[in-house]
Length: 276
Length: 276
Image (cartoon, rainbow over all chains, first blue to last red; front, side):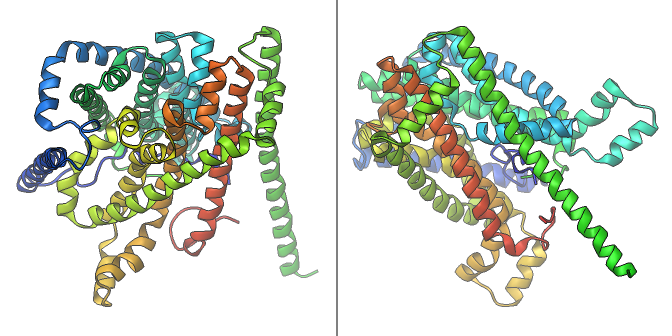
């Protein structure tokens, strides 16, 4: 069968047991916080023990101090990263959903793009960074362009698959009820495909962040990636860890936020069959 | 002619028509690739720009890469690093995933920390890895593992947590305990999800390998692409990207082949389409 149709899924899936009675939820929250505390303690112990050279690992207190004293530069670096991320992702999301819907509705278009998708999907787009720098120069336009190109694929692949696999029963029923064309698309097909589109977007948003940070590291174009690289080159290890921490928090906040949005607006995604 | 013979004759005709149709789709897929290549060729000839070589030139150059010293200097090290990082990620991801998936307490203690770590854009860790491991292969492998372990781990954990209770209870009643329970029941039962995670992990490995090599591989295809760019051998850069594209495609195809072999036993026993 058409292998490339299988969407890249699951990397963004939430851990199970998202709900439960209050007592169970409370215990879970306690354990999660406990886990964070344990992780911080282990981090500090490893750093104090000298197992890892202090050129590569800063302790918890010094990282906290660096974090506090670099709040301004960190905020502007985070802003730069988020700007390129948002512009690129918006283009990718719009393009991926539109093209994916068009292709997914046609058996021929799907077959036509099949091999191409299978070649582009595992393409490490990060390899294009050096070329993109040459073609577009350093700057927001280049970063956003590369982000858009890279994150287009998961959105496109999942939308194409989601639109393709809408149950015929739904479509036939809608047709009998005299829904056609645009209304059929908006009221039946897209909602039915929404869970898969959402998981495509979830992958795209992490991927977009990885690409943004990579371009910043390679090109030195500002943002959190350049912040971390500059701190490392200056030998300011705690500052470097402050940057990494902020980068992680950005990624975590985006992921968690998006998951909440999906739960709110696409509640049927939970119940939908989880395709791999 | 008996009715049965007529029936089987018709079945054979249907089968051959289906085969013809599948072949047609397959051909159409490759036609799509050819059209994309032709568009590249036409646009680049029109633009006549030194930073955008023609498809023919890039493809020819990438054949030179495979057929020259670059194969041993850069391509093979990259392949080995990717496979090493992928293999380590697979082992860690499957083992930790099964444990955290099976024991609720382990899952709850780790979930917040894992959530943070997998949201962290991995390229930010490259400066740390550079200090720890220096330039070269070990650094690249370490960075790959920090990224590729997550899709495997999360998929394995989710699938293990969602194991059918009847299955688990039956195995218990039949006396499966401890390690043999994990190896003989859990691992086979969750293998489809593990494979889905592994498939994502292999493309993540390739992508991260490239960035790590651009920033400090010392050798490898990422290093090749970026140093070609720095010495304005643009066709070489493009050729490197084409080679990577084919590499990703080859990995993905081999992977699907292996999956079909290894999971052949469960075709028909588990839901999903039967391959004819």
